[in-house]
Length: 306
Ligand SMILES: [Zn+2]
Ligand SMILES: [Zn+2]
Image (cartoon, rainbow, N blue to C red; front, side, top):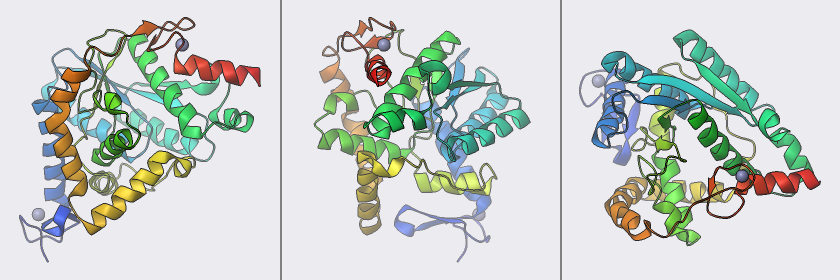
């Protein structure tokens, strides 16, 4: 059993188990795919100031390492990292250490913001006071801070480590919950609205699977252990993930098909929903939202009362 392109031992079987690649050729395949996504979808342009949303896990460290390579090669954009410390003991403190170490070694400026500083307490403590599900609180808080802080720091793009598995889950979740309008904002580059109040989000790892990214991150020493958020198991997303993984192992290629089909209909979705979302500014914080008060301020108000 050898690599498809040489006589070396393979490190991975790509989907359908018919392409086996050694470390060197897998790295080549992986990097080419990321750079092609950036080029095909025009994710980064001249004079862009790109922030990588860095959690310190495998996806975001892989993303940062590849954008660094690209930056050093084409030298047309700026690159920094932005990290959110939710305050999840035993998990985020560890991955943040990875992030700090990587940025220190590679001369990347890292901007860290915490729930404690910005919202008054850690996620762990908020959850003790509330019956809310972790992800329903954490999701809006994190998106809010990433958007607000990226704008304040003058970034033009926010790059996130979302991969093919994440996106396939989100697409299916939006179907299951009849949330198609939310899907119109997905894709390798986000937004149906050209609105300055939202930082443009780009997802260079869009067409790579979680397995491919984990393999890349381990092979290239970006991480040495796999850590998972302790709250992720009690989420709707966790159930959809397990369902898709089971389906994928029985019918290989399923996740790629979901993404390919979605990319085909995405322009129609964007066109269909382009006028439906009217954006206001939150009366409390002035960030963009669809109602009078944004989701984040609503949650903060509820938490204050406890
Ligand atoms: Zn090879
Ligand atoms: Zn608000």
